[in-house]
Length: 203
Image 1 (cartoon, rainbow, N blue to C red):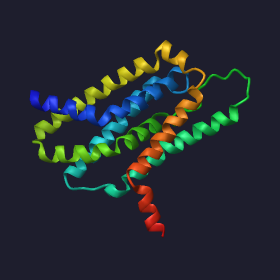
Image 2: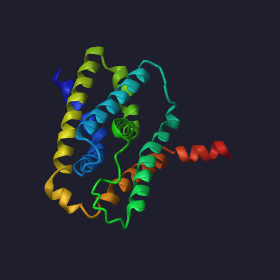
Image 3: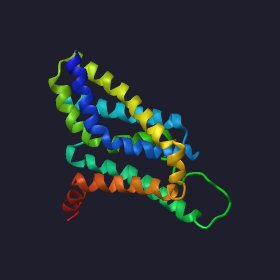
């Protein structure tokens, strides 16, 4: 049991280090009044549960999305980032005192979509673990994952809502949030090789 818990902690940390950055940005937007904190947490859980469910189905031999096209999920954070950037550009020069963040991440479902897109590569690691582990070990692993999601949210909230952080980023927050999501979307699309596959299909 202890070995399973330790392995689950290591697997979660290894596959979700980058998620801390995304969560911190979301909580930064929350601190600026654009997105309720509970939606960040609920969306994170919803997206992560979807990742676990997909991995479990894949472990059982059912493929929902072919591996070579999983990278298309990068379009989710890319679209949200572009939308936020457009809002920022439209508001540039306005002096109406509107301090709302340039992005709301599409609400709860938007956060879930970002979580799934950012964790698409997790599926390739979770699937063989779920396939080879005994059912009790898999259940323990999933429980540990769900507990650690809460820990991740707490850490990101502490950083993202810290007065020092929000004050330091106050002048660039409207640009930072969209930039992070655009960068994340492009990274997923490029790293997954899906752009090359699309070009090959279209040609």
